[in-house]
Image (tube, rainbow, N blue to C red; front, top):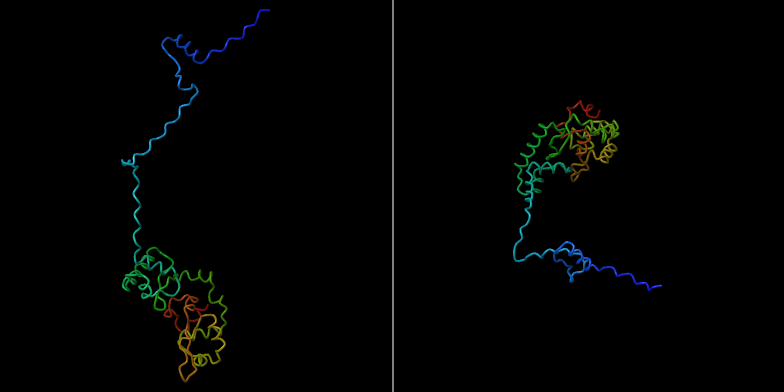
Length: 241
């Protein structure tokens, strides 16, 4: 058998390229310095030129700060905080530059606004100051939430003594006993524990008599803005009923 010749070597890429160039015409060859399969690297961005200011995108202007609160807003906030009745002296001491006249103007302005908006509350005077209180038409709702005089479980004797104290304050036990015709010591102590009355005048030297008066809790319980709103004598049943 004749000797078998080894198969011819496959053409190299350069030979294939030369053959293609000869077929197409022209002088064409591969770049011997760059591998055929080398991938082109992405170009990196040039570092910023720190000597030259680069233009920045325009920014929206910063929002303007809200205007400072008005005296009426400040007074309204203090009234909503609650606590003891807000007096002009207390408000002026807490807010720099607030005068008693400006305080009263703020109260009047707020009340006019509440009436115009048909709000269920008004700023009402109480114990030398002011509080936010519901209108009489809405006092029944407050009693449903927190309980009225009936829910306080006041006995007829307690209501009797409380009425004497409310109308004659400051009044001592001897006077209360004389009006009722019976001893009122235990009832007075009960009303003090309930926070409805308190000692207003201590006994002076040489006497053991103390005098009692009603408290802000008494006004709140009976839905009164001040003692001036107490019904006339003889109509106290309408308050407790």
